[in-house]
Amino acid sequence: RTRVLTGITTTGTPHLGNYAGALRPAIEASQREDVDAFFFLADYHALIKCDDPTRVARSRLEIAATWLAAGLDYDRVTFYRQSDIPEIPELSWILTCMTPKGLMNRAHAYKASVDQNVAKNTEPDDGITMGLYSYPILMAADILMFNANIVPVGKDQVQHLEMARDIAQRFNHHYGHGREYFVLPDVQVDEDVATLPGLDGRKMSKSYGNTIPLFEGGRKELKAAIARIQTDSKLPGEPKETEGSHLFSLYKAFATTEQTQAFKQALEEGLAWGQAKEELFTLLDGLLSPMRERYESLMAKPQEIEDILQVGASKARQYAAPFIKEIREAVGLRNTA
Ligand code: TYM
Image (tube, rainbow, N blue to C red; front, side, top):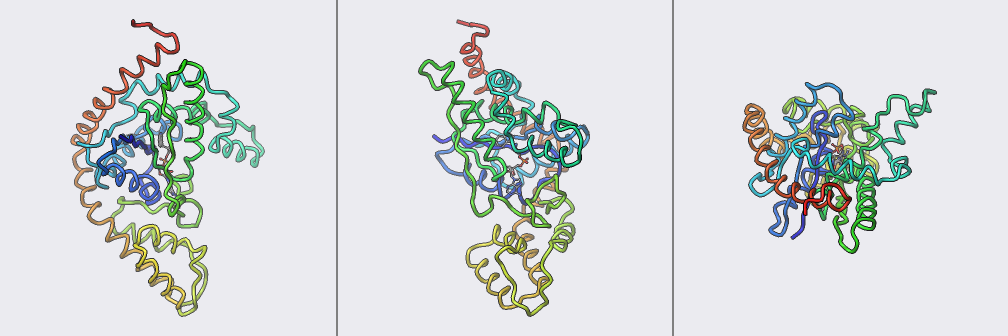
């Protein structure tokens, strides 16, 4: 059987990029007969970016409700919160002790923060925590703890998957003596939506403030966000380029091939951007409305979500607890034989 695993960091409100890059492919994969799926809320990761407890808690609820509203079947899928699994930070520490510092020096998220500091003429490591620095190791622990074969993510996470493989290989090589403790995970990136653009054409991202929220704010906010998508200044009637248009990329990410073809033709024949935005709204609202209803009713019942997560945590620990014992023994801690 194939084990599919992915997580979302619980900061901010889930957006279309999370849906296209991770939620949708993950849920599709989980519906296959031969798949065991592990989906989780990365709330330890949230602490790296956010020190506001209320926001972390609110975001966790929103992201849990989003997974469920998007169709996650919690009877089939192991659905849990990272911080309910103490074996994960334990594994993370063991992996930290064998991960070369040089590997972390190359991580994009860390390097981007250093570059920003350099551009601002401040100390390179100003404001950078050890959490941000070793973030990829915690993510490796998330994946290796459950020996996932496939990890569906957006393109921005590909480097982290390479690091997880590297770390797994080092562990197997050094401690395995012929045994492959960890499976080397494969990344799954849907090329069409590998990087969904945001309102300004950069990657849609919580940190750029250019997102289209999935459910928060309802249809009104969906419409308002779509109205803010930047387009070129071509007038109604003038032919529009679809290549390089992020409005078109957004449409394409959620439409059928036939719909996309018709939309492309209409734009090339001079469809006004205002009209194009109307069409994008109709498409997205049709897709999101039924999910939004489920989302809203779940958000009104936080205890129900909590109960689901508790069941998920105990399922996940049935696997994690015996496995971490083996890992402890492998590195020479607590021989329980
Ligand atoms: P996070 O929370 O930033 O994003 C969650 C998922 O959404 C994808 N994504 C996008 N995909 C396409 N276009 C976009 N504009 C876009 N924006 C976000 C991300 O690639 C990701 O798949 N470190 C991870 C969470 C994590 C994780 C893990 C994932 C922690 N442990 C283990 C997989 C396996 C993160 O911060 O994703």
